Amino acid sequence: MIRKASILLLVFLSLVSCDKKRVFDEYHSVGKAWHKDSIVSFDLPKMDTSKYYNLFLNIRDNDNYPFNNLFVIVSMEEPGGVTKVDTLEYQMANPDGTLMGDGFTDVKENKLVYKQRQQFKPGAYKVHIRQAARQTGKVTGVQKLEGITEVGFRIEKMN
Image 1 (cartoon, rainbow, N blue to C red):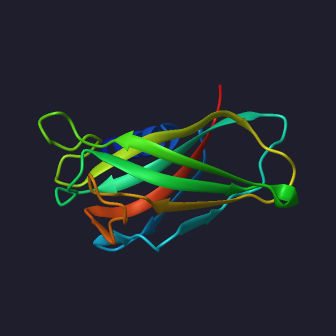
Image 2: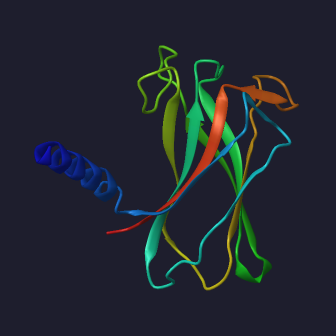
């Protein structure tokens, strides 16, 4: 009995200590498809202004995702009314069409670099993410981006 309890305690401690860099990690579901007008937003916690951080978009997708890449528009509202907007492209599939990312089933998780060595100013920050997928040769965006199930935002402290 004591041996089982010791093993469980060690497993628990190893799981807790595996993610020492994490400062913020949150997901929002977009259902079975990410609508082009659906903006996923995150209110960031107050950050230590003397430290540097790495920022990531986390995307969970499945085999219904029809594209090789993903285009997103990320807006970061900073204190003082400044908003910085980035249009980003990420590779989501291998050349053979299999999805990239971590996971054992058809659901994959992708940790995508957004900003490195970010230093925050004092005050509140908000991040807004929307998909900007388009089919080749079409001007209008994809109304419902199938296969994306959750969108997340993660902040890690630098060593």
